[in-house]
Length: 606
Image (cartoon, rainbow, N blue to C red; front, side, top):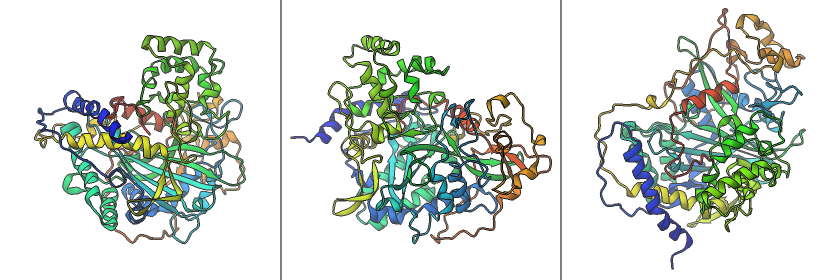
């Protein structure tokens, strides 16, 4: 008798092969017809080729220091160190001015004084802002961040082959292994360029072959070596660029997400957030800075938008747009449930605790209200037996908080039950499991028994549909997939107080000397908002000595297609850091070309 996983793979095979075929025939540009022989019978080991959590492999493949060092090297910013980049990243969760090296969580406030991002409330400050005071790299540090997973997400590739999906590294703070109140996880989610963009989706085959071949390698040491090469150096012989590259986390590409729960002075709940890298250059092309910029957490609409009584002009437009997602949520298989939400509805946080959390959509939804009636009408058109409450419950599963905690064991209608996480995480640092005789960091029931088999099916069907090499001349390049690729802009709107938004701020109106003030200087909120976008060029240079813990030569020459050009002050010493708003708008613009559906047949992005 076939087990559940095998049966699911068989049932999905014809559908997924059809999706891949559409990718070849309908979406690919500049391609000759591809001859595909009879499909093969690939059967990869998903714990070697898709979700790698084997301790002997991940611990030797990458380190947080090697990742941050690679990003610093890519940027070409003089004297920038991994430690400085780390500190600037986590300082975004402090009130300004703090280190005065980039954005802070109180940069934007609404009329009531509430800190916001994208116009929705943002918890500020967070205890994670204290990470500027720790050493995340050193193995003797209790706060060291260790790798716990390397992930193949070819299933997120668009059918036209504009990219080859995402490739991810998950790190966890070591304190979380023994203390549940001291947990912090970060995940680098790189969108990887298609090595042969002229071949459409078929151009990703060298990447797929790399991951498939890992199943045949018995030595954990050799798999670790190959994965280190793939993530940090790429495979030049196959034109595969390194996964860890500034470009792959910039507007228009991938992102870095966090899963946060650190103790401290602030009473706070488990929360997930998202960031982009902004590589800043002068009009002459000189590297100026590399910054982590907070952005919205994707597919996480603010929960009160589900309530007709919410006093926000986006409420009705959201409800109208949501009706268009009912069909994607009205699916008979858990793996096929998905939702696509315009970014203007997304929050800057996804809180995974609390009945009244902004991410607990079912709490905010009125099942007897007009919005519920709208959803019911659409369900009637679709001939569905689901209720409006089922649809909203399914929408919650697509948010970070829902998928990681709030939707655990929820009934979704038609007999579907959302599978459990491990409690706020799907890959955990605090327990291990034996897989094929070796220790692996544990993964959740949701991953192991539901989503990983689906990803394996998609991956194997892609491998089975083994086409002839693409011989078409290179008529397009990856740059054709980026809209307004140079990212040039003049950022005069730096998200100041509402009453200041009509004021056009120029560099000459700001006193550069104020940026050199002591951290203890008292800033009024209006004054701080007036200054928060500026960084002195001389302040980028630091005398801090960075420990080379890895002793590697993971270096590349700066070569970015996604750098953002900023204007320099008349004295040549200062520039404006792009706001979260600017980065989000640029990200949206650069992604405008991408199909809504990936090769898995869903609009899922997580």
